[in-house]
Amino acid sequence: MSELAPQILRFDSLPSTNLEAAQRAIEGAAEGLCVVASEQTAGRGRLQRQWISPKGSGLYFSIVLRPRVHQSSWPLITLAAALAVHDALLETYSLKTDIKWPNDILSNNRKLCGILAETVDTTQGRALVLGIGINLTSSAFPPEVHEIATSVQLETGKVPNLEIILRNVMIALLRRYEMLQSVSGGEEILREWSVRSSYASGKRIRVANGQEVLEGTTRGLEIDGALRVETDEGEIRIVRAGDVMELRTLVV
Image (cartoon, rainbow, N blue to C red; front, side, top):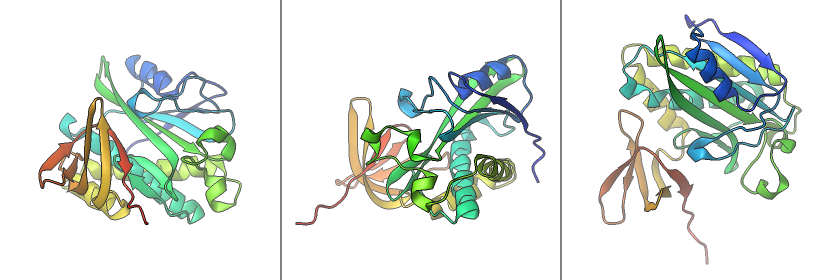
């Protein structure tokens, strides 16, 4: 089992669990500090997007990590986190999910969970704050995004237990985190992520990164977790950041 011993701090409301965890890390918090909030008033997702986080509707938490692997491998931590959420939901509710590169958890092509990793410089060296938000009920998001968002309750028909999900996600996350820091652990994370994600290979996608838009077919991952995309001209492009969208074939 992991050497990490999580210390959980609980808050009724926070602007952002990532911001709180980052501040604690700067102040010298030990690895494993976990900040959980019933709601976030200024939650954030990838690419500076807002993450809607109403009270009692989702699991919102962030954990402070001080990885022992080289920083070039840190992007694999978000892949490991996606694996942990995927496996915890499968174990807890028999809910089979997909992983959209790099770390969105989908069910029936709708977003169920978002993951945000941010680095912070501290007196003990650079740390990583890993934030995870899981929609537990349909009140976790506004009606206008119902077509692209979903929740554990909607997908399973069961009222989810936040504490059980938190416990199982943490157990899975710590297991993956220790795996990543072992010999050949990175390769194992990449392999298992690729098995669980329909986006790993053979998926037609569009990637938007600022003003650049790329279309092509996924061809696996680089050693640092970057996505390989083959364009229609046969060129392999390496994607390390961007918003990925599946391109579906129109049936006429």
